[in-house]
Image (tube, rainbow, N blue to C red; front, side, top):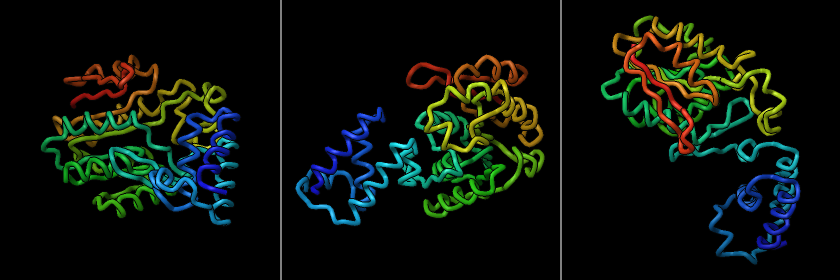
Length: 273
């Protein structure tokens, strides 16, 4: 079995099953099975796969055909130019969340201490620490998620402190200059309509926020003033349809601003205490 044939067959299987971007997915899975980078394929299309490589590739294709996200197979996801380790204990970081980083960096000038609520894989906390050099802390209610985030911080050289707690229960009052969060915002009532890759594989605690999807927004906006220093900023990712509700919660704050994503959908909201 050559690389060319393996990619052709894998792409056809994935395409027939309706898996998005089947060619790219086949390349990523074969590269992972062979421990090479994808450009290797273009230089060596006639290279024969070793038996162990073919067996791994077949298993990865089977897992993807069953709905398992590619990132949970390879345990890799790029975020803001860095590769993060991901496991089923954490939400897979999305490109849209990079808009939170961009807004936070614009507002974080001079911030001495930054907090990331619901850190998951640690993408926001690690990225902001490396970009600003500030003291960064991160919380998550999931101990398993914190372990993944700690591993990412250590591997990428970021100095981040981690706390296992519910929202900000373990954070001292009046101690933070900037709070960021990509909270759960999917309504429980939307569960059945989610893609199976999301519904069946990503951690429910990182997805769902009560019947309306607003539960975590409500709690964060109500609790964060306790820990924010005067003039401190809160920056959060917005789920689809959440803009008006969250803007209403922040009506008493200062300098509220909303940033759209590339599709023009309100994606990030920020306000100053």
